[in-house]
Image (cartoon, rainbow, N blue to C red; front, side, top):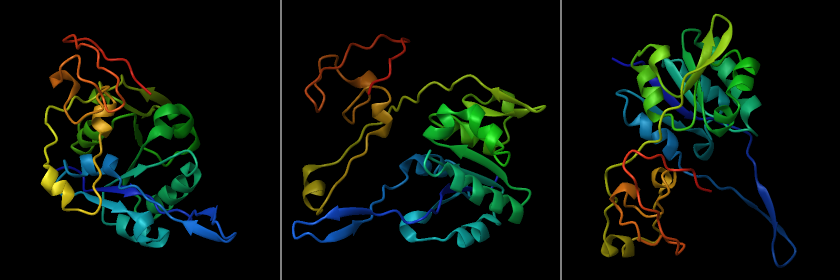
Length: 231
């Protein structure tokens, strides 16, 4: 059995943006995005839980209590919230000393050395796409064999080679009827974006001349060739 894993979009101070209304008054906007980046690996590990704390107003105290029932914490962090996330990770570690703590997200992907040196509570960082890396870690695969992670060994920070970007082989399927029946529909293409496909069809399956939503055309795909990143 893999480690019992808690995927955490951590609680934070409520941040609102003041927007001036036409009549000169101010209103507050509170906006959230569903953490699909954590939902992917959560669905790959038996017994895992995804705790999306901010929109459900789950407090730090409640989060610490919940984490006591888990063996591995996977926390998605950001640059503005890093210090606060380290604080809550330390509190979770104090309440549950045996728990392993992994940080994921853009901040630790770009600054793995700095993050590990500043936050001793972090056991491992899974850089960039972390789905398979964190699953392998939870399943007990030796650290030296897991691609895309950074960790400490004998007091030194070690960076394993990057994990190649995932290439999704499934297609997004829906119908105009199902879309029309809802008041609002959203389609997320996070996976496609990293391989330069702005449609739901994977890049490898699309004809070279197929235009994207912005009117641009895809380049031909050469089997085995790497695809450069795009903005």
